[in-house]
Image 1 (cartoon, rainbow, N blue to C red):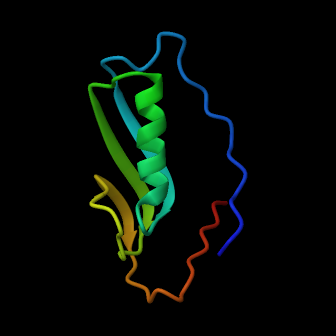
Image 2 (image 1 turned 135 degrees about the vertical axis):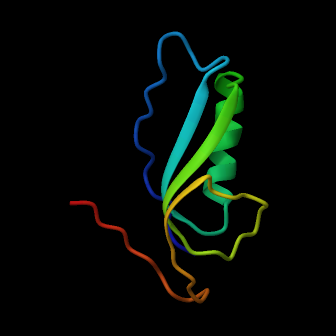
Image 3 (image 1 turned 120 degrees about the horizontal axis):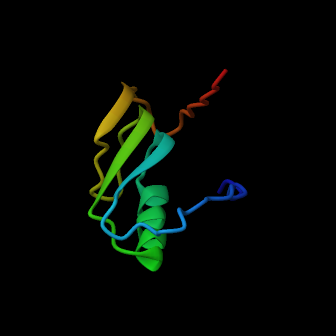
Length: 88
């Protein structure tokens, strides 16, 4: 099992997210667990009008029924392979 990554700070607008369109952005979509956790956290903050998901890489292998609205690259991998994303 991999160690958990430290969470980065998230800034929420002063007016909140009620009725807003929220776009969650992730580097690599794999099992869907990270996005599920983000959706749960959003529920604690407010009720957006809609939530969309943008990912740089979609590996497949979903454990949860989550689909990205915007995908930079579909990259089928084996379960043992890893994907590293570097932004320059």
